[in-house]
Image (cartoon, rainbow, N blue to C red; front, side, top):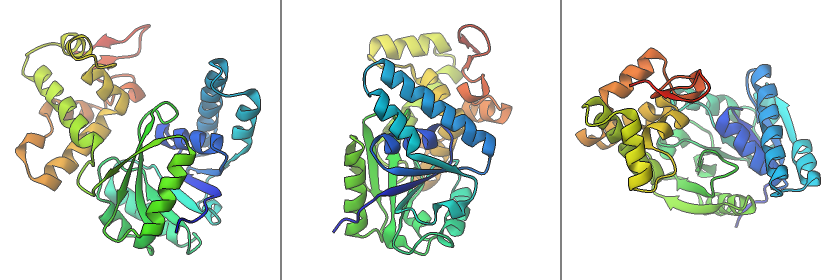
Length: 293
């Protein structure tokens, strides 16, 4: 029997967090967006407003829907602000120790019947659930980036996730107008189990001198009809996130085919993380992106 979700908390106001807040608010839910930084929350609200305005300009939503969605969102710097939420979705950095600390602190303030979800793209839901006081009410709800545009959401049950939690998560995602793919709790789930090794192989192709950045991206866009080249996509995802997912795959499956490319490691060590730092496989500091290799 599914629970009724009325109020949704989102922890983290970055690209994924503000995207989830956007679609949940547009779906009619009351949303509490949490971040430790007031500046990041202010920036997130500006991003949400801008994205809603773009949807309005394209006649995807009405002006009344835009206004109501913004009115549905409350920002808070304290986890206590999530105390009365029915569902809380964590979107923090892809580091297990960070997520586990958040869940430990969250459980102290959250009502007992509330469901906790992680937007993790690769980490074990079973292990994350074990850091909470309610593993049966814990589930993976993995949105794709950018959230307002991408149709798919992966649902991942941990070993303890009960049927009511799963059915509630399914109903919630359906109310957002998204499609569901159910994945078993294996490293990186479905999408990233397939996508990230492809990106990693593209980086190896660059590292070994098979082709340059432009040639590799053009080959996949024009030769395989991918909307973005793999190196362009890596920059969009964030090279630190790509590396974290490859490390989870390599450690979790113990197969050398998932070894992160040394060039990916080098770029992350340099702080060249892609679009968010203005440099990755492309340099974004000028009028148009320029390949860095």
